[in-house]
Length: 269
Image (cartoon, rainbow, N blue to C red; front, side, top):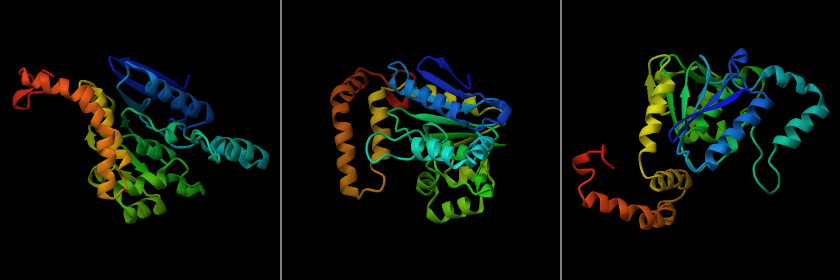
């Protein structure tokens, strides 16, 4: 198995375990990761996922040994054009790197050690939040081999860092170290080497403590309102949230009225 899941309460840690290839992605791994995240999204007792790679690499991108086998035109058409290209209708197929086209209902935190490059960078950008070790780095390393971004990189990167910076990072293919990622907003926390998974799991446990209806609704509104004008965005936020207030928020307000959570104390919620 190239993918395993470890559960700790309501937090699931999804681990890509292909160390011999620095966790580069082949079709088997891509399918297994997609299935793992769909299982997480469907599980009632799973609230937050941490996504990481084994050992000292998050993901070195698409397995170029596999990519080299696609020089046969018939095989390329079957495995890339037919299986991975978007259909005219229906649901999106998995990306070459697996779950990169999934639109989950729950948060995913990326725990990044070592390289998250090429398609691995795209998987990191797919996560809602990224925790990076100080020695970790991102980069569009596939620039060297004539392989474009197919797993959301050209969509998510400019939304995070802006168009000009996204152009510079993507077109030069340079290394983007963790400290610069933090400055640019490409990650939210930098920790010592070897500590990314623990820090991400600690954050996940904190998120998992809260009432999940509001957590998921706010996450969905942040995603859904991107690019909308202010009025339309406010409408979406209201529509997403009003029923959660009815079913979850009024009860929470009652707990506060009874004395819980006063003076910013989150220990009793």
